[in-house]
Amino acid sequence: MKFFLVVAAIADLALAVLLVSVSGFMFGSGPESIHAGAMAAAGYAIIVITCLAAPVAGFVLNARGKPGVGLAAAWLPIAGALVTVMAPVPY
Image 1: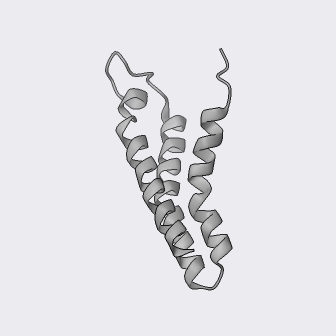
Image 2: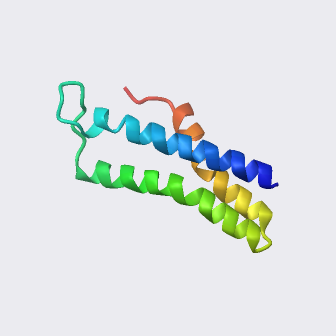
């Protein structure tokens, strides 16, 4: 069980790094930016914080004797990212 928590922590940190690295294309001032507003920036910050807090919550829940809930909490941002990627783009 702990192996899957470690894999989830690595995946969550990789997702957070990806989100931070592409944030310039959303909130930057360059010509390739989409110039997103303040609400989008706040939502984006909450998503990044969730990616960083989910593995911590998973390890804490695992230590308190709830390994299934901890594993689900740790994999939640990755599952959300997969659902978001599979959603059709509204043109």
